[in-house]
Length: 236
Length: 236
DNA sequence: GACCGATTCAAACGAATGTTTAAATCATGC
DNA sequence: GCATGATTTAAACATTCGTTTGAATCGGTC
Image (cartoon, rainbow over all chains, first blue to last red; front, side):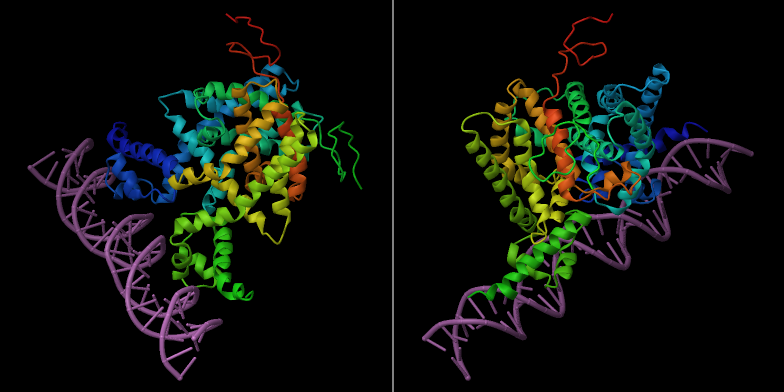
């Protein structure tokens, strides 16, 4: 009852691998099932046989990696909180928990996760309707847990402000993993040799921690906002 | 000699408007010329007549807004540097110059720029080959000027580090303007009422300034990076 | 009113898309 | 060895795509 997954499931994984790679290069819509099955070396009908439809294939590509990735993020957070014994974590610990799982994924050549991380970055912006429902579902638990952890680690930040800063954090994170295309533009190149994921994380974490801890914006003045202290004066 | 732009040239702009709106909702590839021309109320052939091809239409959608937007960014920076009379700017001034032009665009209802900003966010990640060459071209001057301004405003940050932080900055910026879809996930909603562009900017700027000024990461230690000074204690 | 370039229009083009079908092939139980 | 279910295969399905065509229509000039 086991070796059935030997050749058959191989087909499924070959399809997933090929699809993952092509989605990164060309996007979902521009990648046809014929390209995928050609690259995977399988028959065209195999996709609809094993996955049902192209949309389901796309979801499967994500579930294969995003599930374990987010589980590991939560596990990392669990470990930290267990060590802390009820004390709030330090902000850099929470950021680290958020980021380092992705780092590990990208570093493991067996998992072939580098392509997936770039795909992930490209896809957050994906306007496709079924993706707009699928991705939040995949991220829900991570968001809830980390939002709570950040709220404890940064008690001086009001909730609404924290939500936005987490939003910015997600942006910088996904963007920096979406590939160095935009980076190659900023640097005149030859700097971007440090594109291994580990050094990216080592640079990203301080940036995010500082941003999350930034002084609160001035309440609602019209003139030059002076970015001074965080008086929680409710304007109006 | 004026009303000629009333119906005829109106066709081009009607197409551009419709395309812009549909691209935001569905992406480039998923949006067909038939949808665009239907929404614009013009004939299908009008796109190829006025723009030559779908790709050229896409470029036109971007050029119409991205050109003025980036020109204004540079003009803003020019103004600041003229006022400073040779002194380096403050980091928040440079960030403000980068961000506020986009804010103004989004606030002008006449320009209909809100949709475009969201489109821009979605598109930075666009894998399409001709976009990979077109966008850097559009951004080149902005990047050069702002990189120089940041280098003067943040003299203690090494160039390589600065390049990465600008990268992160672009990420947080584009992401936060790409629409509140991901945000709606973080907040349980009902917080996101503050989605007008101005309040976003007021929150975004302090975050970015703090991130850009973050303490430099520890050199290359293996143990827990304490983000303080680079103690080269070897954790055995 | 006739001419003309610019624009619009309906219709068709070939190519490519996701999906389905029915036969062929495989592995495996009895 | 044969029946059975799972998989693979080649071929076709109906749509949809971007683009092209050639005639119709418009506004303005002589």
